[in-house]
Image 1 (cartoon, rainbow, N blue to C red):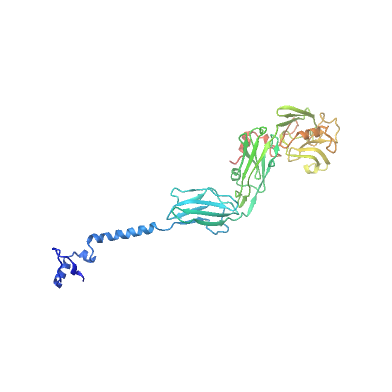
Image 2 (spheres, rainbow, N blue to C red):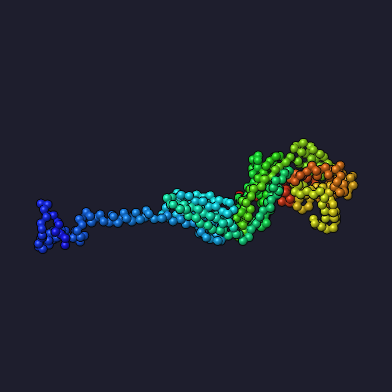
Length: 415
């Protein structure tokens, strides 16, 4: 049994032990120690602690595992939820998410730095590369996924045109190609700002039209920026916007023309001072002209006017009306008139609802009032009609939201 080397008290070793001596020596050992073999009681109690230390060391050496949602390799990932990056057995050192369109997704870590979440959702129809690294790791984890394209989309056509200069009455008007059910979501994705700064509020005229304006006319020289962030905004169930762009336009000089159909005169004021006065003719008793504030929304050097297009049968069809400027969608214009006697202007209201100025056939005579007024005007100029015998024009009939009080205008906002 190899016990011949056990020392005696004197420190000397005896050459041999008898069988009885051996048994006696073993019998003197406590039972618990005997079950443990030749270890002392102190050594026996240390063994479990050693096993625990080994397990802890193994845990400390586990490799951090990073997972990405949407999963790497997904070909038609959703785009209505944020991107998430998570790590187990470690903490995140860095995360970057880049789209093949050049865009990036910013995001934030949780307190423990075991999870990263993008601040916004990924764009549709875009391939993304996610690069993540755990602290202490030698290599980065790279994942890629591609978001699916939306099934049905909408866009917003805006007025005025990008880069244009307009009169002080020009609102920012947006017409959508699909009816909008979630007006708040769409309006939040559109901002209109001005330099100099002024409060600007949106107003929904219908589920396809949203206009923006300040409380009073724009100041001359204002720079306006329209920011569209409609891409992947769900306007109605399953229908998503596609635009993400900024456009700017400017406000020129102030020109406000006031038509008084009792006196049959139009006074044009430029930046507060009288610029010109013209004799005019308005709508007759059977075809009264809308009253109220109207904004020039279209301009034509010559255009055809046909009564059937405005519900008046075959009363007229004039192929070459000169210097026509639209005031309402329903067909009200301020325009030149060459077919009426010059004695009419300033004396009689004889039209079918439009405001007419003396003009010449062919639109080439620069000496006549129709020509002069047209040349002095621009899109967005304000034309106010008074004493026409007709009620105020509907604010949605053209770009004529100025006929709403500021309180009523703001009541039409969805945010």
